[in-house]
Amino acid sequence: MINLKKLFRRKKGQGALEYLFMVAAALIIIFVVVRYITGAGQEATGQIDLTILQNKAELAKSSMEARGWNLDSYTLVTIKRDENKFEIDSNGDNTADITVSYAKSDYKDDINQLTEADYQEKTIKELYDMCSAGDVGACKIMAALGGS
Image (cartoon, rainbow, N blue to C red; front, side, top):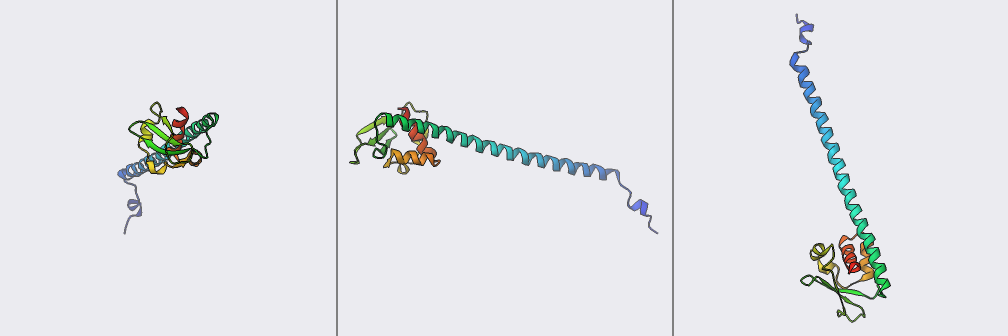
């Protein structure tokens, strides 16, 4: 006959293995929580950066309006990366008649990496609206225009 007490008796090594699995589960939970918090922090930082750029774009818009620019008709014709300048058409003839330097801009390197086709031939008002909608490149151009 089988002795049931002996069959169900715990072995000493069995308890250690259970504790090992509990520690492993706790470490996995901690790792998942840390990854989640880190990701949320990075997302919040990105949102804060965009908000700062949008505020700078708002200041730039006010500055340009104070200079008498009609933002609906002033058009960004080209970004001259080699000279760190924007060329702007103010009278609608599709030729540059205003040149604005952005060499002193905090965003000089970022602007040089933008795809020009996405932003050329846009009015300043369109760039401002793109920035308000969350386009970081348009915000950097607006901030550079306002800082010039």
